[in-house]
Image (cartoon, rainbow, N blue to C red; front, side):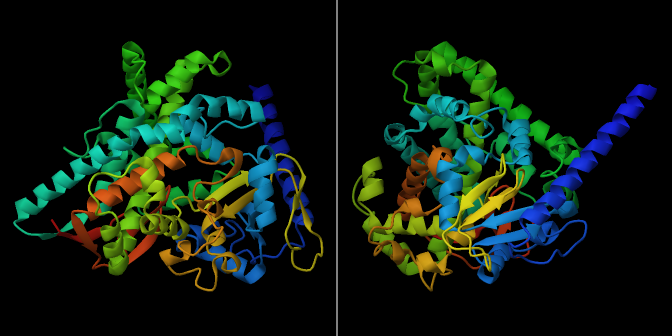
Length: 508
């Protein structure tokens, strides 16, 4: 026992020594980088970031200090927020594998989802192995094949809404959009990826949706703040308390569901099935180099369900909020999509410029994920498009272990790129963009780690928008604010969890 005691003391001493060594090394290396003074000796800027309007401080910092900002986290560790275009291109492109996700972020994904594509880091080969197993299932052709499923689920939603109108004997009622956006997203990812119907659009929300929302969609609590502030330094904190219990519960529910679906899929093994699950299993069997065991396949399934639920449902909610605030655009898009029949995947992408512009502007001003986080695997020099204030150097040496935040909302409101009205919702900017494309948006990230499901998500959201606008008109009688859970959701100002009650009127 004495040996264990001495070992524990020695381990703690070495850990503390390394922490302070890295802290002072980082302070010295980044001493010339401007940024706000720490507002707390203990929490740095973590508390003000957590309790402030999502993204507001990043916007203020970068407009005050420039493209590279240094700020302090819990217990004095240094973080960087970067919006410099050359630095972003390097971090997400050429240097992508030198900037893995921070240990805390990886611990979150591993604990919740398993060792799937969102977790894997290390070599380029390890990451590409998983992308090869999932990529065919999330390709443009797969999204093209599955577009009819998107319309089928949208039609179910329309049918259920008409029942709500009939039950209230009115042609104008209030509908909670975030609830229905979640139902649509979960049913669609279930049917299209797993050949599994959660049946949220005909019955009550599935228990899994309630579990996922219970984990992330809640008013900010002190416990959640402690976990958010400390998991950068102590990833093991994710295992503690009620939050740790909720993470384990969510993983178990996702895992049990994934296991059952996997068994059913392997038993049926339909060679003609075009669902993502079937394509992934066929790709896995066809290529020995990417062969995965059942737990690895289950991890990918958990990842697909999670990624297809929260970001998609949040984007749907924000898009319909903006439609409700823009009656002229709402009517213009309704007229644009009023042609007979359901547009194909290719038509959704190419034949409806107003719909596309509105979708892209929603992603620009309301990216579902606020920050893209990375950690320097080694001390590395990052290229810059302009020097850090006062340095004159077009490179920034970043110490090993430095956490770098790429604040998507700031990048997508950069006035040098988007003009003096970058803070305003103006879909028409996409109609006169010249060579500007959606690749300028970081809502789905870019480079080797860009979102594989972006085409799937875009077609799904556009198909729902086309279908609903043909039947209904939307207005918003409430003041809505951004609310950060796992993703950025809308809510009625002052309320606890996500909420978007819109006034909906039947037009058919």
